[in-house]
Image 1 (cartoon, rainbow, N blue to C red):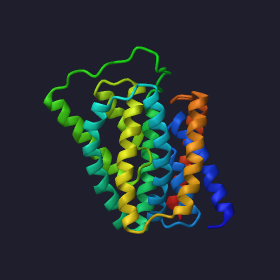
Image 2 (cartoon, rainbow, N blue to C red):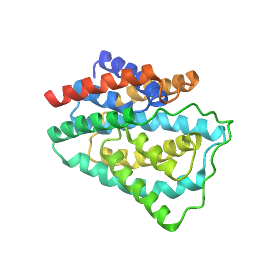
Image 3 (cartoon, rainbow, N blue to C red):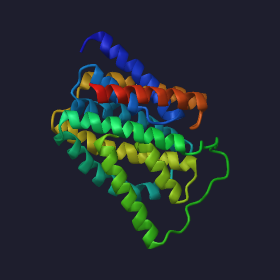
Length: 254
């Protein structure tokens, strides 16, 4: 891959890593960029997971140091998410490239509309009093575990925007946003390992592009955390929405 493309991917990763912290959905930018740079959609989908994997390793380490990581709940919900991710990743490798591009464009618009509909979440620092996990009935546990299986299918298939759904499921369990984000990062990290394994087994990963993207996403994630800009920032939300609509239209028209 030419040096200018690798540099562009690093810059894209920097932007997407920052977006993932301040607004979420950075993969809606990185995935179309990989496709526009010439990677087949399935290869772009697999390659994009490298940046996500590396970024979440560093993010999980940060949450662990802050002592806001609920290990027991995370371990309970990660298993169905992994099973779903294996199903979703397999589906993503067998459908046609054209169908995947259309599905991606549809999902981009759908998730963007969902995030615009939801009310912005306020700032919540790790030092504030947080909600403890309530005692859940067997029926509620079954519902939450089922949700994580479905979310895993989505994450294995396309990844982009999966964090929004994970946070919604975690809030149903009674967690606050600080601990919810920690669970989200852990679940995404673990099921990404398995989903990436599916793409690797089928030769659908471009290592040069993936590592260039990973450098950017890691740096961007750290910058976003340092800036302490949370979800709901009006400027970031408008910028991400505009770019997602542009990329979705480009995918539909090509």
